[in-house]
Length: 168
Image (tube, helix red, strand yellow):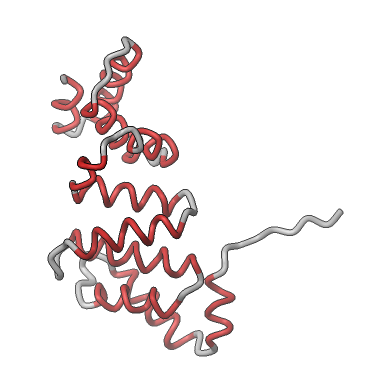
């Protein structure tokens, strides 16, 4: 695929145009589905990326990059249970003290935080804290929850998703 070459050159808009042209001409392949998913992910169209990824066979998810993208899609679409599952699976296979490990641990902590489980979130952020060149926000989140917010009930309240109430 020409689109794959453009993707590798980081010419994402051109790659997407070519990939969409192939899809419109009814060209079907797992490579095209994967590429379209990656391009949607890069452009932060997480629902579209997830839809493309779900067309792939399970064997494709042996790719750490793809599994990371999948976990992040779930996170950004507020499916925190699925995000925790995908990111925990990925984290178990990564080498500690590396950028991919730090990214997965940080995102896993954020997913746990969004689920309201601050203790699990802190555990994963602590694994990243000493590698702050990758994710300095991990240390900031740890300091916030340990130094600013001491009350566990307040920690859980702050971790709850924002809900708007409409007065009739």
